[in-house]
Length: 112
Length: 116
Image 1 (tube, chains in turn green, purple):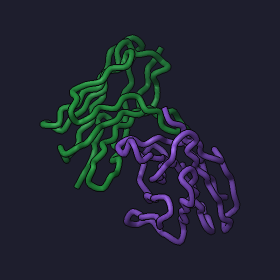
Image 2 (cartoon, chains in turn red, yellow):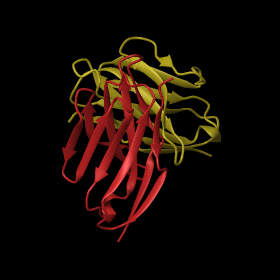
Image 3 (cartoon, chains in turn blue, red):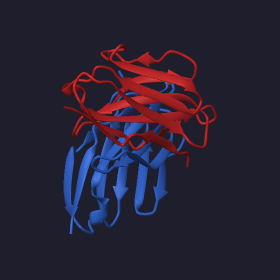
Image 4 (cartoon, chains in turn orange, brown):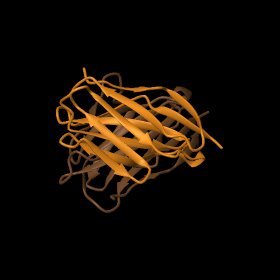
């Protein structure tokens, strides 16, 4: 069964701290992995998408890595800001079934 | 990036009424659309997948007669919650995928349904 797990479920850090969010997946036959941001009561904003042939993607203060062999992805946020407070979701796309499988999300709170 | 518009953003209705939610792809042809449901502080759960012109494929445990999905054109899919009850209150999100980029889904902003 294809499952995606995120740890921790919630994280609170002081402003300026660098942090890492973790995502693990059970099926290594992943086609791509995507990180999303969701603000309370809002839809999803795509942050980064890593194809299975890639190791990492960077956008501004965000860096996402993908290690298929270990079934893990990380989202690194540098110099966190209060505006980064949101829920971060990772999702793996599998050709088999053609579906995005979502993790449970990590609720991030950055304190000023 | 591609834009998916979802309407309404919020709806409040009385128990027993039906509610229709629209999902439109504004700048691409969506051959496949997906409908998700999200409970507070939980992840997105896929309800159904619909291909244009075909019947939707529902996930296990999702009532087909309760959640009617129509995908009659390449730019529009609708989800109708029939005879809504308070337990149907949730956040519903649609996403769309085109024929060219089959491994990328674009998401709508979601619809908050509250059934009184």
